Image (cartoon, rainbow, N blue to C red; front, side, top):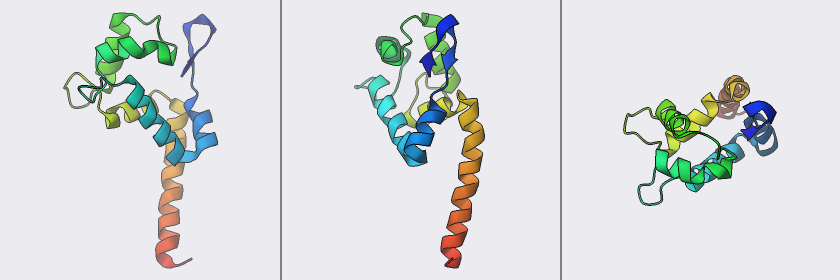
Amino acid sequence: MAPKAGGEFEDLLPVMADKLGGEGLIKELCNGFQLLMDKDKGVITTESLRRNAAVLGLQDLSDGEIAGMVKEGDMDGDGALNQMEFCVLMFRLSPELMSDSRAWLEEAIEEEFRDAAGF
């Protein structure tokens, strides 16, 4: 997501998905995770996100907003984001990408059935 005037964010994940495809997008999300994570702990913590927020253009976020982002994505309750939690959070924060992901899943399932049937 990229900052827009007025403090809103432009959702760039759908554009990336169109250009890179599903597999390419996941690879880029994994690269983003690597940039943001605490290298010693292997997860994104509030501290590592605060340190690296400028990479995302989020240097103006308050400590509370950064902590809220981590809390929102923290599914296992350990206070940090592992790679899967980060990717899921990025998809959840992108409404357009969420709706597109259903279509991608259906397409992948259809392709698997075609391959299995030998079409």
